[in-house]
Image (cartoon, rainbow, N blue to C red; front, side, top):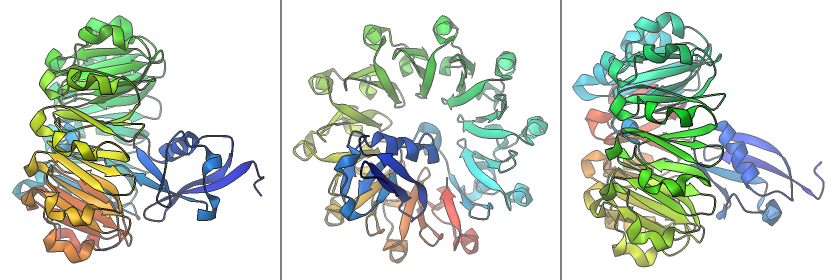
Length: 509
């Protein structure tokens, strides 16, 4: 029985699945709950809600209203599509029995990962995670083996390293055309297009042990080792060659983030090291004095980076027109920033007071002046398509801006977005919002997922998760069924595998 100085809580997903429970000291802040949630899905961001009340990382646990119960709802945030993810033209669904169902890719399904028939016997059971490049997939099984399919030149064919993928794999990361797998002993195995990171032979001796994380740009990889050093390979112009900053990458690195053709590494002392194409933010010399300490997070768009510092200030660099120059809004970025979201060419920052600040390409969400009066307070999440943003307020209303054809104009569904929205997911040109009643609202390019009228009856209730491909969406319902819409060529039509998507699906990627 918890004492009066302790609080018993359960962390529960929208689906009703409990990801954690425990007793915490009432003297702690809610960051301990966030840390616990992140253990369930490393690398994913989330919101925590008690009823309709937003719990922030600095919320004292003692401030929680236990009359509302002990259940804390975990809302996994759909990240703005990275370049690699945003180019995918197929979906892969993992079912509760560990089997995998794939679809999409149109007439080229097999070459885009939508047709997995060649490896079907290996995908009937035991799959625990699926990772994708732009036109292929790699599945990790419970025994640590890996199964691949899709376009051979994009990592769909791993036969050259098959003997190394029979056991022990714990993580797989994709570039646009290759994969890198980390094994339990810290060894790394790579395959796919050699020039895009599929060939790591030049640094093979450095990848035999100790690797704990791998990050991919468009055509290169960067691996962090247990000693804090970094190893890079792949296209030199995309960050595969870090020799110019090698002395700074021998120790202390704790996180690496990628733009299209560059990397940024955060070190334990809060400094940042960058390399790769200067045109894609690989050169941070113009802001170097501001990156020597205090950085806690880095976020990348296609051509620029944003660093959030411990004092809540923001530092930007890279292509000025794509978010690398934030001078126009600099007075608003000196303190209080808690979250940054990217479209392909701009950024949106949420501040501690709930206001939103934007910069970058004006036509791609960098200019929010048309909705500025609505962005002054109360925002808790921002999501991006490739050229627009959608922001959720604490009361569940949504404000959108950016290119109208990419989801920046939600006026057609405005009445449905005035309250109750808990999550927004973006495809390249559209958005899908899940409401508290588990219904879904969509807008943006009609052919790219913005029009869900063909499946509207199936989206009125029960939806717990939405995932996107290039121009389509897939929604998982509480009964484990899947509903798809958008471009048939990129997974919006799942009729060919419909009997396999009627129940039991737990994840779609």
